[in-house]
Figure (cartoon, helix red, strand yellow):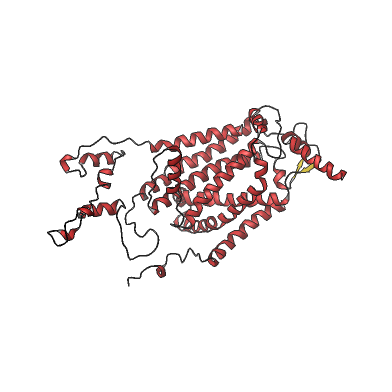
Length: 42
Length: 390
């Protein structure tokens, strides 16, 4: 049972770390394709 | 027996899913009266849900080479009339220039949205959800018909280590993330139809946002689990002659015989390769969806399929079309995996005495192991004997 719980905890750890790692690699879903990459018309 | 159930469900699902695609083709239309433009017959055929060949207008986009000299009469109009230009926009077959920057901004019209939405909200839910209900019913029927598969003669009382802690960790990492992905995926797909009427839009909105976060981020745990279990178990899952004997004997599900097997029997190998192949595929389409307009796979895949079996799948796809196909494929593969995994969960828990221990604490009853994996037990005991002797 320890391995099962550890597997579930590891899945959660990976899930919480994933956005942090992606941000470090320059990927942010929230900021992707925002105006800085576009030509502002205003 | 569970293999037969798998086969029947997959066959039925495939047949049902192909069914709506068989739209009736519209009869050939004489368009001389309209100069090649759309006729009333075309409109009526489209309204009758018939498959209209749109090439008469999608390919009628003018020719810049036919432009008059710019200093001549009407020369500044170029080689395309306004209708031809708008048809080019309509069918995404013209060089669009925009001031917006980013992927897919040069597609002004892509009309696959409604068919995608209707397929997702209609047949995908009907047949996907139906397949899940069907496998649950079939497993219940099997359980009440065949009963729980017991250890013949009862447990030996002594145990043998079936899976090491690291193997169980990899399994539960994969299993836990898969269940989370399945539940959140179903909430996302079916929420509009089934949850909003019950929970209301406000609560569902919170649930959907949470589901999206879980689905997007726990996907990485699933991919990690997939890689770990592949590395640990691929060597034990190479098919061999023994598997054929196991299948011919019905895997021991039919009758009372216990066909010989090593660490994994043919049924487990089928589950392994189903999870690996479909897991890889669902991960690829998932990555395509996680990074919108960054990873296009279907045009290249279609080109490869066309070159191998001579089909005529489209190889020029709009970015949005790639995303729509990725989404639909992601759902189809996920449903097939859910059906397979439900059967796997059944046989690993309530369907067979002693089976859960293999992944629970890693120790299985020796008699259980002898009946289901006799050759593996001999291998382990031979190794232990050597170890003790040395």
